[in-house]
View (cartoon, rainbow, N blue to C red):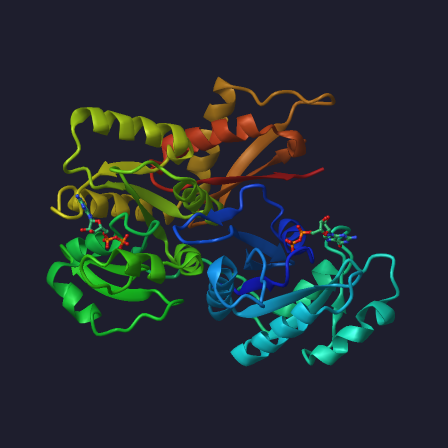
Length: 435
Ligand code: GDP
Ligand code: GDP
C-alpha cells in the first residue's frame, strides 16, 4: 500500500502550493462529491524510489461550530483518519496564530503522526522562523519554502522514513486477476459486486469494512480464481446517503494501486463527470489494466444510449485501450462479458514478451515509419526487450534516443499493442541510449 500524506492547516499557509510541488501535476484528482464543501485534491508524488499519495484538504477553520465551516472540518478529519501521516502547515511569516493552536490541539487528539512544517521560510533564519512553533508540542518544526522548493524533499524523506522502500522487484506476484471495482458513489458498484458474486456475497457480509480499507473477496468462476477488491463495502439496500458516506477517494486510489485489473464503473443514466475522468486518469497513471463498465444501460431509450456513448467518447477518449461494456448490474446483463474482459486485460498486463519477437516487431515498425530525424541525427533503434509487467514495459535500445517525440512513442505503442494483442492494459515504452 502506498503511504498517504495529508496536508492540513488554516487557509493561506501554502498547502496547495506544496501540493502542486509534490505532485507536479495539473490533473490532480479532485473530489466533486455531493456535500463536499471545498475541493480536496489527491495526487501521486515520488521521492527517490518511494511513491506516495498526497491529499490537500483545502483548509481548516477550526473555530466553526456549525455550518459550512464545521462540515469542512468534519471532512478534513475524515481525511486525517484515513491518512498515514499528517503534514501540519503553518506560516512562518505570519507567525503562530490562535487557529494554529486549535488545529494542533485537535491533531494531538487524533493520535496520528504529525510533522509540523513551517512554510514560507525562504530567506529567513531557520532557528528564528521556527522558534515560536515549538510550543505547539508537535516535535521539531521543519522550515520549508513551498514556493521555492527549499527543504521540501528533505521533509518528505523524513515523513516517509518509516515506510519501507518498495521492493526491488515490485512486480505483481499473484497468479490470478485481482480486480478493483471503483467509481463514484451510486454508479452501481455494490450492485455489480453482488451480481458477480451471487450467493457468495453472503460470506462477505460478516466482514466489517473500515472507512479506509476495502474488502477483499476471493471467488472462483468456471474454474478460474479471482479476488475482488470491493471499495463500496457492505451497504443496505436503497440507502443513497450511505454510499456517499462510505465513499473514500483514498480507499479508491489504494485499491487501484493494489489491483492488477480495474473495473471502472460509470453511470449511463447520468453524465460523465470530472471525477469519473480523474479516476480514469489515475488508473492510467498507475499503469493498471482497465475494463470500463457503463452501467444502468437498462431503461435507456436509443436516443439516451447514443448520447451516453458520445459523452463517453468525448470525456474518456483516452481509454481507447480498454474494452467498454454496456451493462445492467441490476439485471445481470453483460456482467459475464465484464469478467471475460477482466481475464483478457489481466493476460495482457502480465504477458511475457520475448526479445526476438519484440525486436522483429520493432524493426517492422521502423521500416513502415522511420523515427523523425532530430537536428543532429536520426535516432537508431537496435532492439527491444521487456523491462517489466503490469503494465508491460518495453525498453528500446539504440542511440540518439533521448529526442524521440511522444507521437512516435505512441505509434510504437500501437504497433506493439496490436502485435501482441495487449488490449486492456496501458503500455509503457522507455528508450535507452548508449553512446
Ligand atoms: P492554502 O490556502 O493553504 O492552500 O495556501 P496557498 O497554497 O493557496 O498559498 C497562499 C499564499 O501563500 C499564496 O499567495 C502563495 O503564493 C503563498 N505562498 C505559498 N507558499 C509560499 C512560500 O513558500 N513562500 C512565500 N513567500 N509565499 C508562499
Ligand atoms: P454504489 O454506491 O456505486 O455501490 O452504487 P449501488 O450499487 O449501491 O447502486 C446505487 C443505486 O443505483 C441503487 O439504487 C441501485 O439499485 C441502482 N442501480 C445499480 N445498478 C443499476 C442498474 O444496472 N440499473 C439501474 N436502473 N439501477 C441500478
